[in-house]
Amino acid sequence: MGRVEGKVAFITGAARGQGRSHAVRLAQEGADIIAVDLCGALPGVAYPSATEEDLAQTVKEVEALDRRIIATKADVRDRGAMQRAIDAGVAELGRLDIVVANAGICIMKPWDEITPQIWDDTVGTNLTGVWNTVQLTAPHLVKGGGGSIILTSSAAGLKGLPFLTPYVAAKHGVVGIMRAFATELAESNIRVNSVHPTGVDTAMASGDGMAAMGGMLEAHPRLGAMMTNLLPVDITQPVDISNAVLFLASDESRYVTSLAMAVDAGNTQY
Amino acid sequence: MGRVEGKVAFITGAARGQGRSHALRLAQEGADIIAVDLCGQVNSVRYPLATPEDLAQTVKDVEALDRRIVAVEADVRDFGALKAAVEDGVAQLGRLDIVSANAGIAGFGSAEELTDEEWGDMLDINLTGVWHTAKAAIPHLRAGGNGGSIILTSSTAGLMGMENLAHYIAAKHGVVGLMRALALELAPDMIRVNSVHPTSVDTDMIHNSATYKLFAPDIENPTREQIGERFQALNALPIKWVDAVDISNAVLFLASDEARYITGVTLPVDAGSTTK
Image (tube, rainbow over all chains, first blue to last red; front, side, top):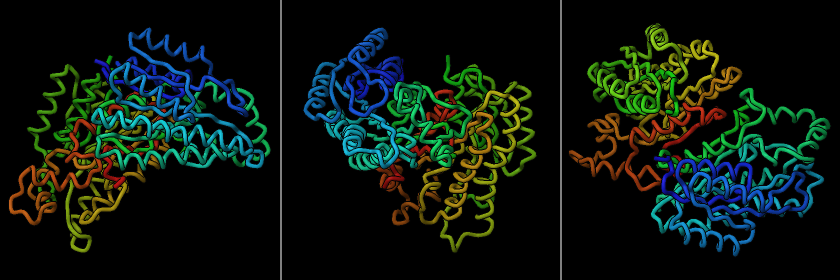
């Protein structure tokens, strides 16, 4: 008997990286999946963006576990598209229990090089996109009599990190969304928590943006220590975040709500 | 394959309640157990504490799961006794991976009326006892070379103030400080340190006349139902109290390799009580 057997999970940003890992981990433990992903690039993102082939690979991996998955190309900023993907998925799979608001982008630039477009795209995807996800899925959870919502924030949602102004602002905002919804949805037996990864070994942590960080830190050497993990590990794996998501999604945590859970190798404690 | 298969866990206050539940949950997932409990009364505590029979029941329950258990009567205030218990357990079971510092007492009284004895017992057991537990275990975790996971049982009272619990609040807040300090010092050895923060748990610690009197001074002999309404007012989720196994599931997660990169976290299992 899987730890989330018979449940249905809606996951954004599910084409690859942490999102795919969440889909696979929850499916391993018995859940069916509703997956969305932009499957496209946003301007200024300096690492390769997810593609439709990536989303197809997630479908393949979930189906290989003998679980069902409904995957849709959708932008978390587009409420109409999100509504359709959610409603179609719930209609097809029959229920909704778990929501993982995972989609996000990360653009690394010094504060004076952040453009209004970078600000709007980051806040639109990483903050408004999370609000869209929660507000549009919550009615299904209320109707079902309860559920678990997990928002992917970041160590940068608990402390400042350099060269990430809109990202830090949006990820702090995610904690606010989490706490606000936790209060209003508690009476419906819906739990809302956030997870806060440190660096995770995915495409987001690759590419020109990450390479440019070296130069930025060289120019501002005192800030380098802020990236340090307390535990002697350089980078965590997507499954480490998925295991926290699984715990929060399962009935094992049925009385855990409004928790900002760091999965950060102690980064925020250093 | 259990989620903590082949590991050994040291648990204080393991005779009953949350401690026994942790022992069973970890054993269900493949761990062997080193269990200690005072198995006796503390003068300033106004509800019955665990007995040797309770600890014997924990042994029986763990052995029924085909896991090994070394159980010792020991007081967390007595570092020498704890140290000997852990050494004995590790000698018999071969290793140490997980520490659950769970032993604790509850008491009530306004800050100005607490006696020196009440204050002293509370701090000695609920704070110094936790430090003793970690201090006795750390050399064995380090010696194993496999890292480890230490879970300290704090409380919602370790994250927020409440009335008539000044000594308990002070001790449980202190546990958070201890957790953070240990997390820093032990990280180089991949030993993780986290705390759990339960709201009211359905155990003997809340179901006793002293606690009932505090929560329902206006009712002569409150029933479980009546007292439940008072407890439910503490929580955001519409429940009265949580079960011991709910804390055990959090302890299990933190103890397992699923949480291998989680350290320094205060994990509430509180039905939203600290958000209210």
